[in-house]
Image (cartoon, rainbow, N blue to C red; front, side, top):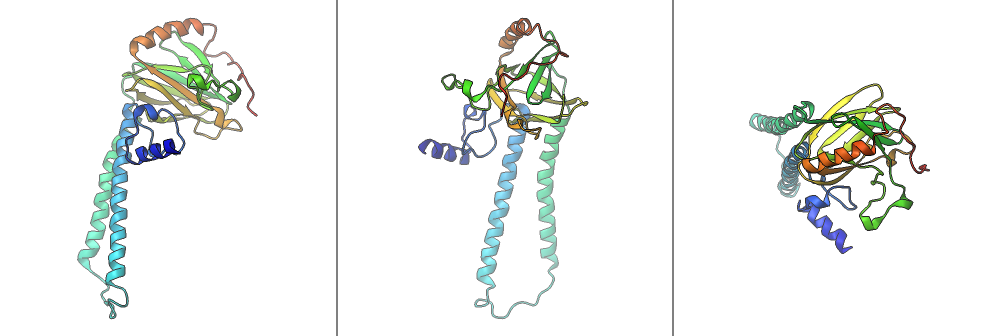
Length: 276
């Protein structure tokens, strides 16, 4: 209870440390702490909206209190018969327009940043299957592997493994690198989503969607399929380990050897345990 209360207070104060936000937590509030360029923009825009909404709520509340006190039947036995006030009508039209402009400008900036993919330094191809993910590294030997959820019975809490979020193979990516992610589906529509990176892209069969992100902090980050794709929709976790460019280069050499038997078009292996 003390731990939950502390997390709640830290979330309310916006003081949650980055190391505490790599995966969803019980009693968590606010967005996960950003670990990428796009997620930082989304986080900042969210905070701006929060302040605007809070100011509007406070203003409306105070206005209602003033109206109740000033214009109740006891304080104002003879009500006004005024039906129009040009100045007031102009003010309550102009101010909302200004608020909408203040909201629109940064929102367009965020949308533009997400939609315009800069010059990528590497590409990651993601394929959604029922119910696991397949990954391909076309710029590093074209090796491929699948990532299945580790069943509850095999979770080792002593290693920091987390139920419903761990995979048998993790995605490894370099930090401070512009990464293009190409997403498609093999059977039904899935959605590859990692909140800490600010990326969420549908995996549609027969279509190749693109997104991008740039990780700014090393660490392990989690995501999940965000499109209802069948009975095991809740069992398609995403685990990404972000490392330095040097460590990634070393991992890529090892991974190329480890997954050399895999080819981009081969049928991926079945999950280790059937999800009931």
